[in-house]
Image 1 (cartoon, rainbow, N blue to C red):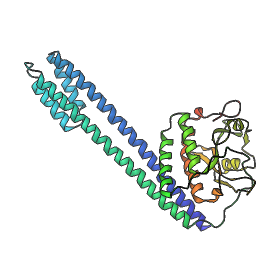
Image 2: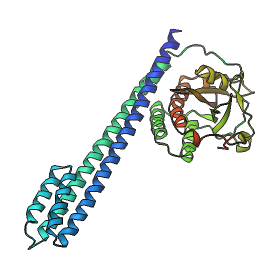
Image 3: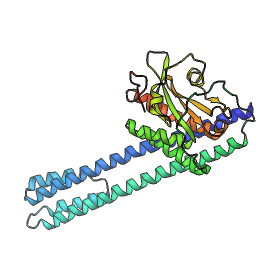
Image 4: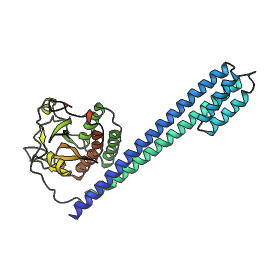
Length: 332
């Protein structure tokens, strides 16, 4: 009991580290976008000032140079604008003014490049730290792995396409792939991107097939919203699952806990079912049919929990993008 409790604590800590890194990367990307908008605004102001200087319009030149200095974010750019303002006091020669404006543009671009590089470095550091922490957690989970697993009594009666078994990956490589997957899930903007990330999730878990079941609003049933590894025609014929059914998917939805379906040699593969938990409750579940008894490993279970936690926020934030059609499935 103590080992299982420690495993849950470590898994939760790893999840928090990866989710925190993904959130930090998202915030940093927003900062970089703000830097880029600022640089574009400065370029537009330089163009406006250059046009006024070329037309020998003193009043408009002074106004545009004043606005340009206000948009400057670096000391070099401000100094160049001040020199351009001094040179514009006399329009006997516009070449010095134009030269200073070009220097201001160069200084501002260098400032933008420096800010972006610093932000990217910080992103990489955060992701590396999360990956190292998760690697340590994986090692600890392997050390305190419980001797027995609590089995579930039902299996997922699905027969997916059988792709070749992938080569085993080192723990560090897997953790980097998980951190990248969570980051990309936080940035996903359309269903096509989400399909690609679902496929990557199945590959990381070494799953033959994977289905995302979503709770139908106002109903007491679950329908497949996304899938990978199963024939489309088969998925389209899957009947809705009742929330009260005696199967692993329904139990995951009701209890909000990870469910394990043990493999039956020669009959069926095992499976892991992770609930999609949000601040408003459980909105669905991810079921993965796993090869070679992988459902009993801490690595596969931790991956399922981490991906489900990240994907829950994505699907819950944009439910209209993933609602099944009237036929019973979205066919993806």
